[in-house]
Length: 240
Image (tube, rainbow, N blue to C red):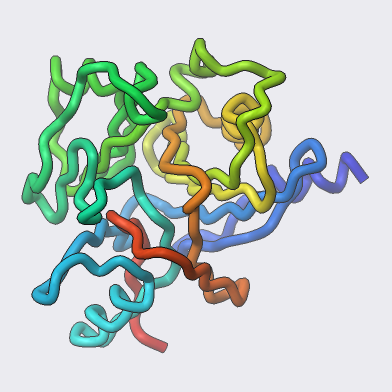
C-alpha cells in the first residue's frame, strides 16, 4: 500500500495541460495540480464590479474571451476588503507593494516569499527579492516559506497542534513546473512542508493560506465554496 501511494505521488503528469489528482502522503490526503511553464497561468483579483471573490465570478469574466478556468485556488492572504496583504503583480501591473518586515500572523513569520513567473516559475525569499528584483509578469507574496533551498522553515515544529486545511505552491529547481497542493484534512506546517519536500521533491515551496483554503478542479468534480476570497491563481483554457 505504501509503495502504491508513493508511486501515485511521483508519477509524471500529462504534458501540455494542468492536471489535478488526489494522492496520499503519510496517511493524509492531498490534491495536487501541476502547471508547466508556457501554460496560461494568471492571477485574478478584481474586475469592473470590484473584487471577484469566487471562482464562479472569475469564470464569468473569462466568458468574454471564450475561456474558462482549468483549475484555480486562493493565492495568498488578504485584508477585509479582499486586497492582497503583500506584493501583488497582475499582468505586469503592480497593485500592492512588497512587505519585508516581520509581524504577527503567518504572513509575518519570516522568512516569507514571493511566487513569481514570467516564462518560468520562481519562489524567492522576500528580502532576497527586494535586493535583486526579477521581472515578474505575475507575482503574489505570502508567508511563511514552507521549504527554502531544500530545508524546512526553521520555526516549524513536528509536534505542533496548530492544524488546518492548508494550501500552497512549490516549484521545480529548473522553473519548468509549479505544483499547487491543498490538504484534504488538517495538517500542521511541518507536515505540509514535508509533503512538498519529501513527497513532491521540491526545494522551494510557499504557503498560501489555511482554514479558508479552497480549490477549483472541475476534472475532479471539485468547486469549493465559502466566504469571499482575495487573490486567485488559476490556469485559463478554451471554454469547453
